[in-house]
Length: 227
Image (cartoon, rainbow, N blue to C red):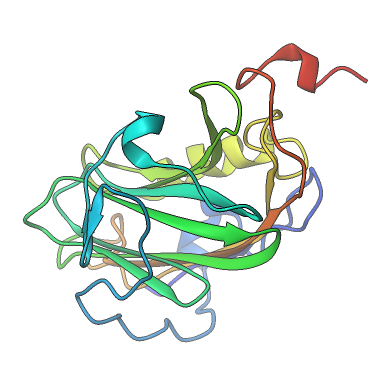
């Protein structure tokens, strides 16, 4: 089955090149980018990282803080039994089949940062990418982005449909109203579907816009949505 191509615009509404419900009439989008090399090539930060691996933790003291002028983020791939990749700027982050989950910490400047995620599996895949912003005050993490399809199980059209709805409910790209990040211009496409149900390849890209202010309210607080 041909691949599907989808996109969003940087507002609260969504524009899709094709509806997920119309899979039988789908047309091919742009060629899927080649699969990345199965390795991590990144500038990782903090005491939990060594060489190309980091340990997962929610503990601020264990993760360490970013230098002045930067913000610390956690990129978590999984849990899933399949290969996953994520990129931010020039950093490539990789989760192998041997690890259920993989966490990585990177420091980013205020401004725009291209991010992407790639998933592959011979008979399909399950995928999850969570990006979290470390709070400057209080032991808090702010959800910047969360993609999930399958995991557990395999990603299928219904799973992508559910995520499409969740994305549509995000107000202006802020997955946590108290965080300092907007995720804008989300686009994704699937590769071939050997069984006409589960894509064997998936690619997503977006722009991660980081603002200067330091979040100080509890994540999800109603104070952040009051006009």
